[in-house]
Length: 181
Image (cartoon, rainbow, N blue to C red; front, top):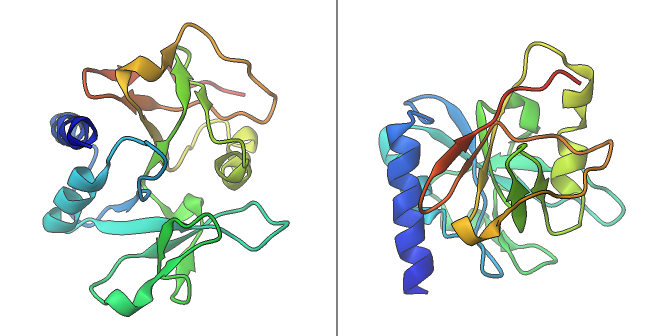
C-alpha cells in the first residue's frame, strides 16, 4: 500500500511538471482498484487547482461506452458499480469522453508505441472509438497511468486500439508521437 501511495505522489508531481492540468480544464480520472497505481494524489491536487474532475460511470450490462460524472462535494452521490469500484455522479449530469480535455486511464501494460493493455472489458476502447475517424483534432489528451514495471517491449494491437498520448509512471513520463489513423 505504501508503494502505491508513493508512486501516486510521484505521478502527481510528474503530471504537474508536465502541465497536464490547469484551472477550469475538464479531466477524467479513475478510482484505483485491483492494484492499479493510486491516482488519488493527482485527483486531490486537481480539485485543489479548480480542475473540473470527472470519474467514469460503467454502463449497464451489454453496453460499453463510458459516461463521466463530475465530482462535487456531496457524499450521497457515491455508489459502487457492479465491479465494486466507487463511482461518483451516476445519477447526475454526465458527459462523454469527447467533452474532456485530458483523460487519465489505468492499464495493465503499455509499450513504447503508446498502446495500452486494459482489463479486457473494452470500455475505454469503445468510449474512444471516435478517435479512429478523427485525423487532426484529438480530444481528450490520453494519459496512461502505470508502474514502471508495467512497461513492455511490445503488445498485441487490434484495429480498434487507440494509442495513448503519454504514460506517466513513478519513475518517468513517456510521450508518444500522435498517429494519424
